[in-house]
Image (tube, rainbow, N blue to C red; front, side):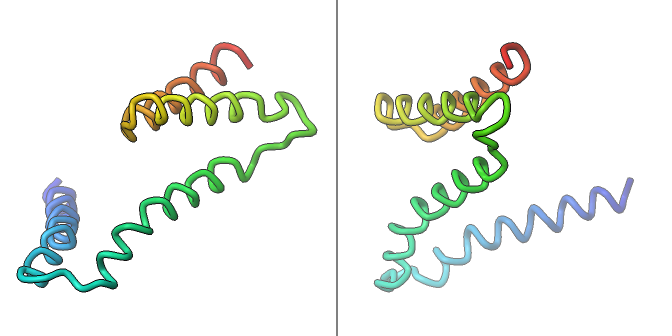
Length: 104
């Protein structure tokens, strides 16, 4: 039990350090390279997540990727409509799970 608590505490501490460290290092001015990464990385990470999520889809076997396609469309529609990443990703995930568990 103590080991588990220490493990969670160390993981939380490291996570917090990685979040706070840039603010401590770049108090006065953020370098251009860091600003560029901040602008480019979110889109790159989302692209990687899409590729990862769709890598095992088999369009030649049932259900032909239909749940994945419908979920991707829902994510895009929700994001265009509300511009809220949490709503888009959460809504798409819930929709996909409902499709897989109840429909396909």
